[in-house]
Image (cartoon, rainbow, N blue to C red; front, side, top):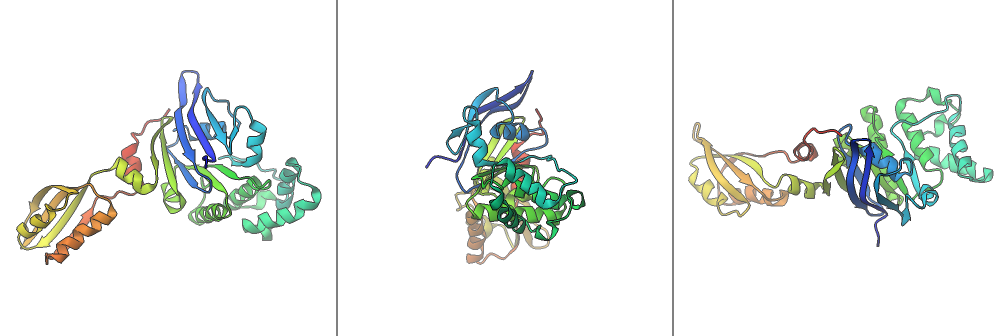
Length: 316
């Protein structure tokens, strides 16, 4: 089955500045794909090209088989786009806002009321149906904007910084909504610089810096690619010999060194290149051989560590 989003060598230049530089990636149907990068990395420019709003300098994007450059009308029918900054018509009521956009998609008046009720229930705004938009909190406005992207039942949601500026509770609510939408069969592609949002819900992650895709994959795969080796620190009771003998039999371990021997204890430092399963087996092997381990720690290899290792603080 072909990916639902296909991006090939996508490039955008503004004069002498290259905002997006040869971006190539694919997203499968039903994925929640996190597009991560620092401010100024080119995420918004890439998304605006994906959503037919910005003409590429080069490359191609296909969504659900349609070419963004040649079949923009069809692309707009299968995507729901939520920009990082969206307009609200402040004197409108909540239901009127959704009704307006449903009318833009030529949904018949008779079908719109039920659709609006369903969308407001989905984003937990039924109780604010008759309130004017100005009275909504930032988080409620974000949820309403997300409902607006769904009025025409798109297959693909493309969201630019959907949790930007939200408090922790509102961010959790947006994350839960995205998971729920993926469970309904939607493909979710969203940009962010909030790493916690990506860790919680994404099936795969792409890291963009200075317009270039510097890493992509599942989090565990990224960890292995970007940080193949990490440091372990182990403290045992007694002499170092038995622990060293066990550790040197593990293929993923190298460069075992004694860094201290205070008060009948031995501190060891070593390099480890395995995954988390292999890491747990290192500790199990020490315990199995009767070695009293009182401290066992590994360098963090979470998304923040991967992000810092993959990027260099560049902007386009």
